[in-house]
Image 1 (cartoon, rainbow, N blue to C red):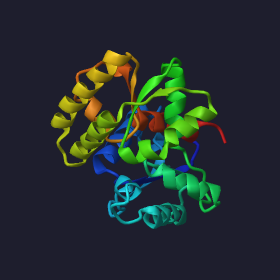
Image 2: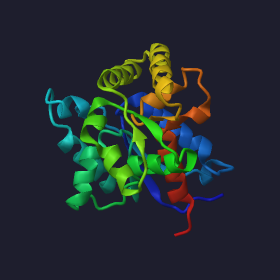
Image 3: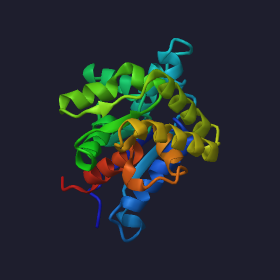
Image 4: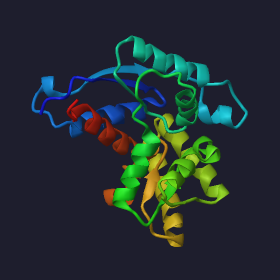
Length: 235
């Protein structure tokens, strides 16, 4: 199946393993029979972007100008649609969109993940993410707009899950999987609902848990699905 000719601009590097997994998912999910039927992409691994959560916790430099520069660079390079493979970054991206600073449509990871949650688990899901994403309430706000319900882990569990994302960034994926499995087991003692990996490192960790795929909802996979839908629809 031929794509519609749109060029996807991917702002990645936050972190690199998550970006690589996103690109793998796009390649697997594309309804393509040859190279030429896969979508055109420009990938900007903007690894110099300061950590989003560290800034939101008041402990580091502001990533906002780096994010805006990355998006505007992809626009200049010819991207027709934009994606950012970092959930926490969308706190800033929402501000850019509200202020009209981005001239190209954004395929939004939060909205795509909530869409998948509604389809897969209409009764609700556990939200697991970085402390930055959790503290901004961005998932809760977007979910409230569509009437969806997330279960929120307690504070100690939120800290543990944030530390698991750092392990993936450090290349310690097996250790991340062991700790994520233990955390999820505790959540399921409260209520057995699917777990949303609402940080792009968490789906990588979930693959190491040994849990069934249907009990994990990947923000990366949801974003990839949204991109495929956008890049193969008729214009």
